[in-house]
Length: 159
Image (cartoon, rainbow, N blue to C red):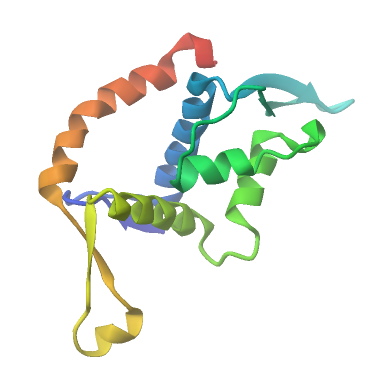
């Protein structure tokens, strides 16, 4: 399934967008010092690598949105804290469109920050509820930060 980027005529896969959002949220918590990530191996015959997360003793500053949900998904028991398990808990298996759910969570957060507004649909569209309309004058300038995020994700301290 694909998703149109706001204020751009570009369509991307929902899974790609949601994955990048989740990776960025993990990096955010590492950068804040609230989460440690380590790479481990498992399996006796066939070895596979995985990323393990652990909460640190540093108290997280209060956040809303996906970052808060992600940090709350880190279980108390360390063996349940493979990043794949954390993401599965966050996405919930009962969700029909888990990647879309991640994107919707981000959009709701951005709505609260004024990057979107809700508009009542007309006609039969009312059955679908309100539509989120992006404020392109606020969103497009954020494109300049893509390089900073990419540099942070490429930073060797997070690998």
